[in-house]
Amino acid sequence: MAKHRSQSVGVKLAQFLDIPLDTAVDWPRLTLNANRNLVLQNHRGIIEYDQSLIRINTKFGELKIIGTNLALLSALKDEIVVEGKISKVEMVDWR
Amino acid sequence: MNFNAIVSFFTGNVEILIRGYQIEKFINLATSSGLYLWDIKRLGSEVIKARIRTHGYFRAREIARKTGCNLKIHRKYGWPFLQKKALRRRMFFIGALGFLTMLLYISSLVFFIKIDGYGDSQPTKLIASLNRMGLKPGITRKALLERKRLIEREVMLLNPELVWVGITVKGVVAEVKVVPRKTAPAEIGACDIVAAYDGVVSKVVVIRGVPMVKEGDVVAKGDLLISGTRWYNDQQTNELVKQEVAASGVIEANVWHSIEVLEPKVIWKPIPLQSHSIQYKLRWNDKLFTLGTFGVKPVQNYYWQRWRKRLYQGRNPSEVVEFIKDVWQEVSWKQVKRSKRQVQQAALEEAFRKQKNLKLQNIKHHEENWSEDGMFVKLTLTYEVSQDIATIAPRERR
View 1 (spheres, each protein chain N blue to C red):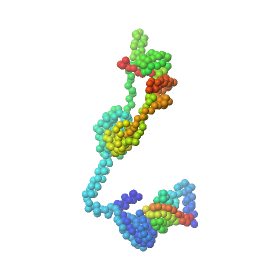
View 2 (cartoon, each protein chain N blue to C red):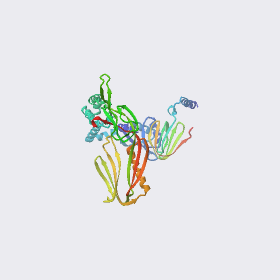
View 3 (cartoon, chains in turn yellow, blue):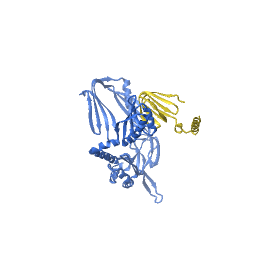
View 4 (cartoon, rainbow over the protein chains, first blue to last red):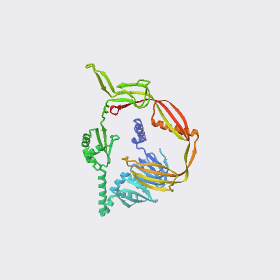
């Protein structure tokens, strides 16, 4: 609870100081290039990887990517690039 | 990604096959421990394929052991693996090295010299002086930059008509920017002002010289308007002294310009027939290459149309590359009698075209005069224009 409060204080401070949130806090950042390429920054590991489904854990919850011929173009500590024909991106139980 | 590809090539990378039930765990542990995995593809329910840099392979093996996965090298990529092969084919690599060296050397040369700011005149003298100072195609960029200031200074000394010379190198092009010296116009000697057209003088403004006409005078072409000879009485010697000056002034007059157009009542009109021929050509400067001909070219009774498209205009505008399409259309000529209105319309269009070429300004009014001359209709358009008719007549020519 205390952690949750401190985080919201950090966000409020960033908003007050007019600092862009993406640089101030480590929220997951999702970039979708058409339906062919997805870049997810600040992730917390892969839960499941299949050619038609990829589940990735983030700070806020689980991100479900559904499509065909899905492949991980690159996997780094804080960035994942998914390639393939993406048909659905679902945020499961995000708080 | 390209940078990663270059680094991975030089450090060496391997394609690995990972088998096991906890593949996701393997990926997570590998990435969190700082390993870079890319091109990850699932091949089966328990098999994935991924690429990893060579130095990370041993750490990945430890992680695989922890997660209960089986790791196997499928393929090897990069310079460390190519090295042995390369050393066996010495001549190939000497050739490649030679090519790279040649490429680097050629790209360091200056191939084109672009001169900017010289106006329309040919900069032959400037090019000669640039060549004399060593700036010519083939000079290295380094040598040019070292001698840049010296060349600029010397070229200015060799070409006194230039005020400033600046050299900049952009890739294989040396741009020479020059600023020519502006000189005062040459002084006109003693001269008279004469009439350029026939007309009635409406305004006389004399700047220098003696006016010979006044408002309302009728003048013919060549008549003296302002004289450049002035006589005055010298007060010291009390003698009549003749002074020659360059006459100057504005003499405005009402001038009449007439345009005549002869338009036929009957014309020959081409009626296109089925037979035609099309020829495609490529022109490179004065060389003409035929690309293809379709159809048979008519022998007689045809009209020819040319369509051209400029394809490339590089650094040198004199290098003309254009695509040409020639069409020879067979026609039958038919005599067509035009109505009076059509003939008059055509005559008026032609007259206005001619009037545009005359560039008449300050038109006060115009008159149309129609007459018939056998098979032709004649149109005479008369324009009354107020214009400056003064023109210089040097003494030598008179």
